[in-house]
Image 1 (cartoon, one colour):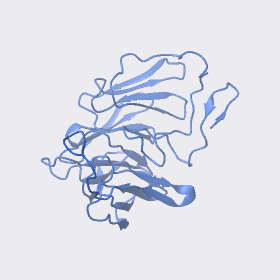
Image 2: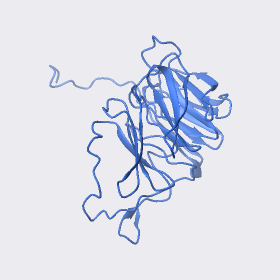
Image 3: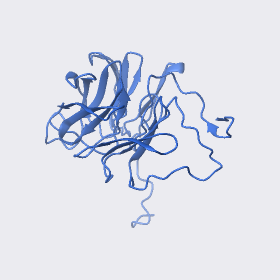
Length: 266
């Protein structure tokens, strides 16, 4: 990082992108882990400019938009359900409240903020007025806890369940950003920690078995897939670095127990 004229740390330039990316519980969404090409200047040597006391709990995540406004979202297991938009001095500009539980970190694109909500619902609201643009049921149900949305090229990417009785997400859906209609559906597998990356026309993601998949954003057709080795387990995250033309993904292989102290072993 470097410093600006105010003495504030300034992060290195991110990969070119059309929007900021909300950090998830696991810090991974879009092409970089929770980042924005925009800043909201503040003097880090001074005391905090403001405090948002009513937003508390885990999975409370911020992102900065092109107007230097700060968006704060309370997702799964946060009592505040929705987003608050602040200017960089901390004055509230807009508030969007969601009745049901938000199950993933949102996405901002095309002048809208997109939410995935309990029961397989998705919704879009205007970033300027907070007006609801649409609500659509895209899947029989949607799992919660630590997965992320993405939005680019007029398509919103969400995860969901192919059956309501499934214990976790196992499918990827592409929704039309303008209407919320389901454009395509891709059947995957264990997607608890879904963290999609959009690179040019490709959507890249890993499932929890360590299998890496690349789909076309426009129609969800698989371009390629790298199958995991049998027995691998991953957090389900993949990091795409466009400038290197590389994708990084990790998984653990099955191991043997060397010890289990203090639970009776040596």
